[in-house]
Image 1 (cartoon, rainbow, N blue to C red):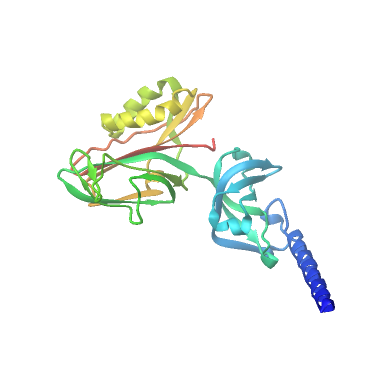
Image 2: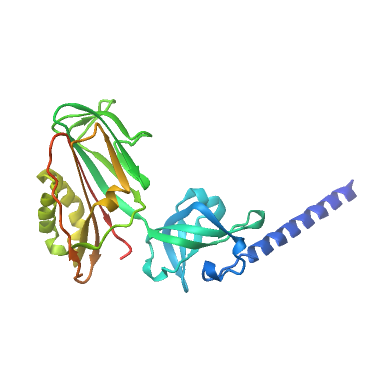
Length: 311
């Protein structure tokens, strides 16, 4: 019996040894070429349909490799919480920037996956801060609202359910009463939006002039005094101490990546969304033509903003 146990133990040790050796060889066969084009055997590449990871850059590795801490749980089992990506946009990214990577990976034996991802596209994650939505029906109206976001909601109030905000009563004064009896003056959300903001035109404003600029711009865009006050109260502390703020109000770049569906359909839908970044120097930018929105009938108004981090 002891002899049988010894043989079984020896067999188990051999299997463990050879299994580790096979795994190590598989790991060593994973190339760390500077780009996908440098890979010897293109057949070893797999393009993953809709493959992506996202997370914060925690380190730059020369010459063009970024290490990120992944925030995408779908890939934790494959890549772990920290992965390296190879990108030809190395110099554009800053430590702590949030990025999304569409990637190509290698075939891997025995469940071993590469620690380096070959990026096909790298995008900054745009955080949408404090979009807030007001409802102004002409008469008491049963409403629902759904947000089709190209990304992920990170915070909502009241709670955003599976079908959005459903079956609340909107009053002409803007009060929203939900089925549980609780009342609110607006709907609130924040989220990560996979969008590319259009900064081809806008305004370069001194930090000390930010309040007066926003007062004029928001009135021109169609916000009333209360809505503009809330916008400025939120954003001014983040902007007034910058040397300059480069500001652009988004149109299709925002509305197509964060579609707002309201039932019943409002007569007027006004969505004001500001993208900006701070600058130490004055920036020459083509002035933006602000298009005012006239309010008629049942009106829904939203405002929000985003800090552009890859500038």
